Amino acid sequence: MMGSACIKVTKYFLFLFNLLFFVLGAVILGFGVWILADRSSFISVLQTSSTSLKAGAYVFIGVGGFTMLMGFLGCIGAVNEVRCLLGMYFAFLLLILIAQVTAGVLFYFNMGKLKQEMGSIVTKLIQNYTDGHEDSLQEAWDYVQAQVQCCGWVSFYNWTENAELMSRINITYPCSCENKSKEDNNSLLPQTGFCEAPVGNGTQSSNNPDDWPVYKEGCMEKVQAWLQENLGIILGVCVGIAVIELLGMLLSIFLCRHVHSEDYSKVPKY
Image 1 (cartoon, rainbow, N blue to C red):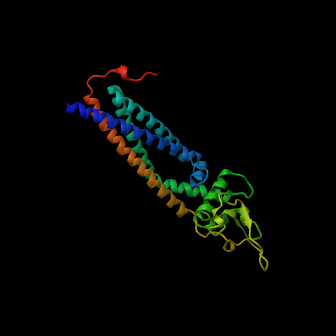
Image 2: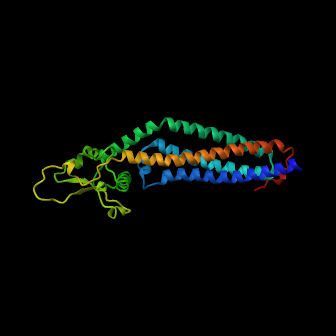
Image 3: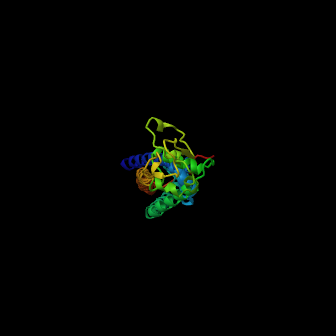
């Protein structure tokens, strides 16, 4: 009686774990979709230019969908006590765990490369920025500068590398860099292109960046802090998923060892 009750408890615990596993798989899939669909943060700048980030997003979507499928199969195998499904579930769960650990290690050791790639993308974007040109990448960067309240990558002097901007005679600066008050900065749609400062007393013979009414701090430190903050959330989710995967593996192997006969007629047919 005690052994039967223990198996029954294990079966329903495994079912609950797999239900949670299914939900977490949906979270991973949703994260991958968010990376591809985001148009209002620095992620949109990266995913437009970085093939590695796009590939990572598709990996997240694939792993998330596969995790949801495994959770579904685990639920059926646990409730109906089908050893074949439990064994398959354990094997695929082990493969997923190995793949996640490998991906995490690769991502950790490529953080420096990702930071370098970010700097290269933004620097090139600033150099090629064109006033009045409708471009999703330019609009994304304008949004980042306005919302994060920064200008350029290392500093606002990065904008001096833009030939079109520096060819202006009057004081002209990137509109999204303009240093505004908190009330004025709450606009959902930031200004784009180049803005010309009002002409004061005297004559202005050159576009001196020291006279620009813009944020002086570059976006590099703020963006890296944003990535570190979100990286902590991602790592927390991944660790939680890994713990659930290990518990699911232990419960599935325990239940599989104690199921001596199986009735395939209990498995729903579609």
